[in-house]
Structures are given as C-alpha cells and as structure tokens.
View 1 (cartoon, helix red, strand yellow):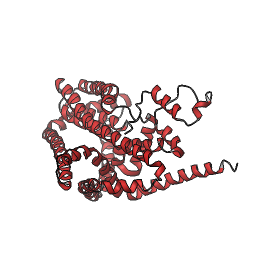
View 2 (cartoon, one colour):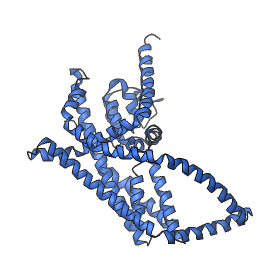
View 3 (cartoon, helix red, strand yellow):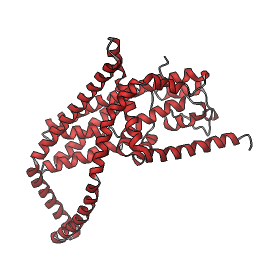
View 4 (tube, helix red, strand yellow):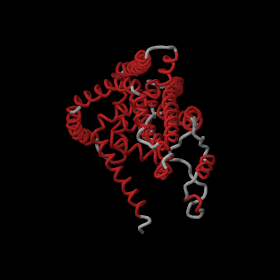
Length: 382
C-alpha cells in the first residue's frame, strides 16, 4: 500500500490540478482565450515573419507586415460574407412569402394529424411568441456588453500577436528554464512538433474553409439553390467546430433553403450535397492536407468540444482541437502523464489489454507499433 501511495497522490494532484485549471479558465476566459488564440496565430505567421527577416527587414517591420497580411485576409473574408448576407436581406419580402406558405402547409398537416384548429394553433403561437419576446429582450439587454467584449477581443488580438512574435526568444528562454538540463532535448523536440502540428492544422483549416465554400456553394448553385454561396460559407465556418458545427451547418442550410423556396425538393438536394462534401472532406481531402502526425479520437474530440464550450464559450469550441493536439504532444513526452496522451489519442490496440498484458505497459516500441497500426506518422525530430 505504501509503495502505491506516491502514485495515488500524484493522480489525485493531477485531478485537483484539472479542477483548478477549469476554475481559472471560467474566471479568466476573457483574458486567457485572446492570448491562446494569439499564440496559435503567431505560430502560423512565423513562416511569413521569417521570410521578411531573411531579406534583412527590421524586426518590427517584419512582424507588422505579417500581421497586416493577416488583417487583409480577414477583412476580405468578412467583406465576402457581408455581401452574401446583404443579398439575403434584399430577398426578405420573398422570404416572408415563402415562410407564410410553409407555415400554412404545416398548419394543415397539424390539423389533419391532431385535429388542432388553425385558430388554436395561432393562439399557441401567440402565447409562445410573447415568451420568446420576453426572452429576446433579456438577451438583447446583454448584447451591448457582449458586443463590447467582442471588440475588445478582436482589438487585443493584433497586439498580443505582435508582442508574442517580438518577445518570442524571451518566452522560449522562460520555457527552457522551467526544465532541468537533462530534459532540454525533449522540450526542444516538443516545441518543434507543436509548431509543425499547429501550422499544418490551422493552415489546413483555411484551405478547408476555401474548398468547402467552393465545392458546396458551386454545386448548390448548379442545382439552382438560392443563397448557395452563403450556405457554403456558413457551413464551412461552422464545420471548424468538430461534429457539433456540421450539425448546426445542416440545420441552417435547411432553414435558408426553406425560406428561399416554396418547394421541398431543394432541401433534399442541400442535405445530399452537404453529405457528399462532408464525405470528401473527412475521408479524402482533410487527411491529406493536415496530415496524420497527431490524431485525437472521436470520443475525446466530442467531450473536449463540449467541455471547452462550457468553460470558454464559442472561442473555446473553435480552439478545442488544436489545444488537445498540443496537450497530447506534451503528455506523450512526459513520462508521468503518458496515460493522458493515450486517453486523447487514436492509437488503439487491436487486442484487449485484458487479454494481452503487453498493452498495459509504457514503452517506446509499443507506442511506435500502435502508431504504425493506426496509420499515424512519427513526429519529425529536428
């Protein structure tokens, strides 16, 4: 019992640490999330910064040019999205007419199935509308503060990115000083691997947004679906949230189609097209673009997205997957925390550890064998 005590205490401390980490994130998410997002953006901008530095540009100018290029890209995306939204607003009279037709058809269907008269349905809708208006009033009352928070979030991002790039050497020294000399090589390897994973993942997401918008939007446009490009843009952006985002994208795509047409066949077209694009994205395109150096299993992904959303809101959901990828890199390289890396990863043994005790042990050979069996590339050592 005494022999197991240090391990038990260590595990208890890990769980206590997770609890307090959650408390800190909830209490300080307004400060933490912009810094985390800025960290990921700064890693993506490193190649651009290094490109200018190699050409003898001053430090401040190199960082400023990299950030300006990012701002131009974001502004172009926002302009494209707003132009699509304006076309939707222009069609509002037609949308109102289509919604009236669909509501009338739905009312007739309910009347046939439940013998609930149209007058009674209108009364129920009016009662629920009053409740909805009261709820909306409460939501709108906090909208001003939320909007202010968003402006602060967006305004701080370029500043954080600039400072992270400017003080990167100082921050790297800070990290190295946390570890003894004997572990410096592992720390360096983890940093290289983290940079590679984050760059490939986030750049892959930008490429993913582009090709999903083009594939989905153009295909729906060929089928004559109204607001096809807008459906493609919304689905591409929501698809960044693993699993949950795709479901929301389907729902919004169906709602936009319902409001733009009085027929039901376009809905089936939208759903089938989204399913086909998702299949191509999940099984062919995205694995080739992002690669397979780190795989997070589906269970950990779904739970991670839900927990991140509960702790830090929408920004937490968007950042959940790259954060888990970084955590897995750290866990895999830390002897006392390898089990957490196993929990997050997709290196599943083909045989049960209950029947094959070899899979209950830690070991480099076992880890390499499992990675090979699951098609995961070994990390690049530099």
